[in-house]
Length: 67
Image 1: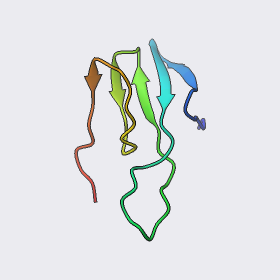
Image 2 (image 1 turned 135 degrees about the horizontal axis):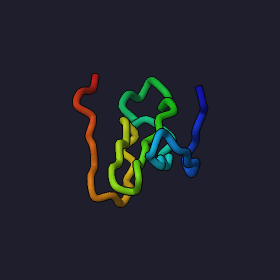
Image 3 (image 1 turned 90 degrees about the vertical axis):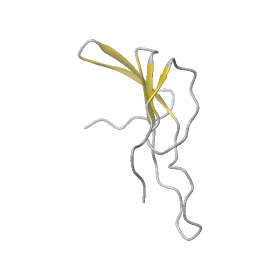
Image 4 (image 1 turned 60 degrees about the vertical axis):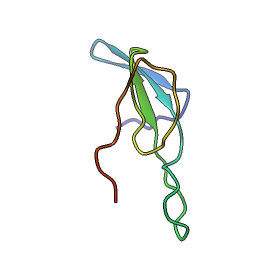
């Protein structure tokens, strides 16, 4: 396991991955936001997780479910 933070980058197989974002989208006033990052793959595809972080990428993946 590797812990990553916004600004980090790493390689997986033949892909270059950059890390963006830092907190989950604020949803509940009684709970503090938890850590959540998104991943930009080869500068082409961005998966934001639930952070709702904005990154300039040709393809944006979106979460398919939420509480």
